[in-house]
Amino acid sequence: MGNQRTAYGDTLVELGKKYGDIVACEADLGKSTMSCLFQEAYPERYFEMGIGEQNMVSFAAGLSFAGKVPFIHTFSAFLVGRAYEQIRVSICLGKKNVKVIGSSYGLSDYGDGATHQSFEDISLLRSLPNMTILTPVDAYETKKLTEAAYALEGPVYLRINRNDMPELYNGDEKIEIGKPVVMREGKDAVVFAHGIMVSKALEAAKLLYEKGIDVKVVNVNTIKAAGMESLKNYLGSAKAVIAAEEHTIFNGLGSLIEHELRGTDIPVELVGIEDRFGQSAENYDVLLVEYGLTAERIAGKITQMLK
Image (cartoon, rainbow, N blue to C red):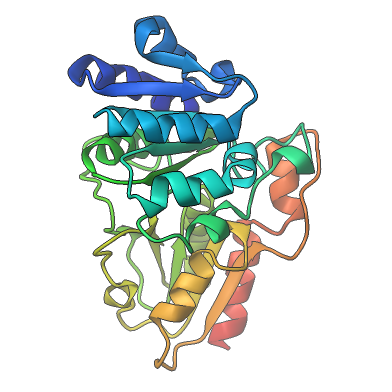
């Protein structure tokens, strides 16, 4: 298991050592987002904005005018929800080189409930021109996508999970923005997933393999970017497609796949969060089960579709 927040914080410090144009802004949650590591290393390049997410976004846009590359941080729910207008106008409209780090997205802040849980963030930001949206699957991919976000000129939204997650990479794989990664080959069905749902899809594939059903699992770490590779390239001989995500079923990965596969006769089913808000629980796994984000649900849908 590895922690994305720690991997992100360590990587930002490493990048800060190499590149003097990187600055960091925080909205009062540095010890949670792990931007505090950058503050310790480079206090003169760190700006604590307090509980002022809208001001932070506008301030970061101004820093980009001065040639800086701002990484801005807080919980996804507060950053995307409260500062949407500033992200839209100050960052995306002018294609400013600002990296928006949405920490504790989805249900991962299980203890604080609906106000702190954001699973409509992709839906909101996917509609904005010039925005690139990334969801790493583990600590290694978090590191590589953080590096890639810096290298990419323009707005980037990087989603960081709060909890320890299974390590799915060996640590030497090439990770590129806009290029999905095949985590498991299979011929009967394809599960496109991102974040924690990649590991759930791999569990589902193992369950189904024992029943004679061969499932391909594709990690779609980029939900939106210029020049994205078509997901049609990953279908092969599949007779069914599942989109699995820790996000509302509206305008997320599922909508992307339905758009990509229009005109084909391959059925698509969505495994995501239905039209409801979050809630608090004793741990993350309890919420994943409550909201149907499980290997068993993926396996059940594939079985039904192939019948």
